[in-house]
Amino acid sequence: MTQAEDSVLVLLELTPSGELAPSAPGLLGAAAAIGQPVALALAGPGQGSGLAEAAAALGATRTLVAESADAASALTVPAVDALGAAAELVEPEVVLVSHSIEGREVAARFAARSKSALAVDAVGLARDEEGVVVRHSVFGGAYETESAATFGTLVVTVRQGAIEARAEAQPVAAEELAVQPSGKPAASVTGFEERVETSSRPALREAERVVAFGVALGSADSLPLIEELADSLDAALGASRAAVDEGFAPQSWQVGQTGVSVSPQLYLAIGISGATQHKVGMQTAKTIVAINKDPEAPIFEIADFGVVGDQFTIVPQLTEALRARRA
Image 1 (tube, rainbow, N blue to C red):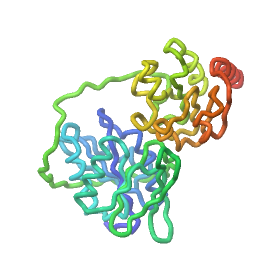
Image 2 (image 1 turned 60 degrees about the vertical axis):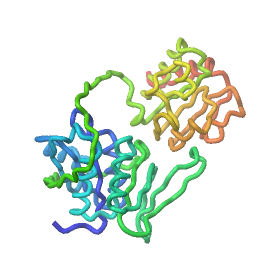
Image 3 (image 1 turned 120 degrees about the horizontal axis):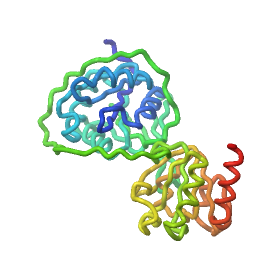
């Protein structure tokens, strides 16, 4: 098949149950904005056709499927091997990978192995007259910078939730990809138990709206105050590191440098001072609303809208107003 000069190779991660991970729509949307998205999925035996259909629905013009019996057990190395084989076939201008824990390692290993440029934690991609430009949010979100490769393939890890664009569905075009194992040492998973959590709220990383609270909540007993507001907005719940350290919330709710990075349409920060550690995880939210009784709180420096006052007075009023509008 003739290769497009602007091919963008997208490594799609899978969930433990073998479905496309939630990062897939954003990755393919980013790829479609700068070129022709070609998806790569490392799948177990028999999973290829379903993955190709799902990828095409999200905008992949082609889907390369590398079937491997070790796809769910061996870590990192099979994905790097598959990425190398796909890059040799497609000759992409850019390779996109999710900025997840595994994605970061795969991207770094592939870049080192192929001697490619590596741009990490991208929050946007665009094209100018010289090629693809990557946008980053750095220093706790205080600055936005751009990077580009001067030669060769550019490997980019994309922050989950940062890309709003979505690609148009394409006809299904699946191709089996032959991969020669490199034999590099790899850790392996000998067994796992998938834990299914049921919740009426969206997952934090992919949520369009997030309601986050800080240690000013005072006690976990006050959590229903925040939960009621989140439910009225169909929002995910987040928390500052201090709130997590105090036991007000599980670590999976933590937003910030040592927690989750989010880029929702709306981020509502309640009683959060806005330390750099927290801001780095939510700075790229499209609209930031802060409620804090301290008018000098750093969170107001980045907030689009700010309310100075007591959260225990303001939050119930806000929740009531939202419920009245939805009634």
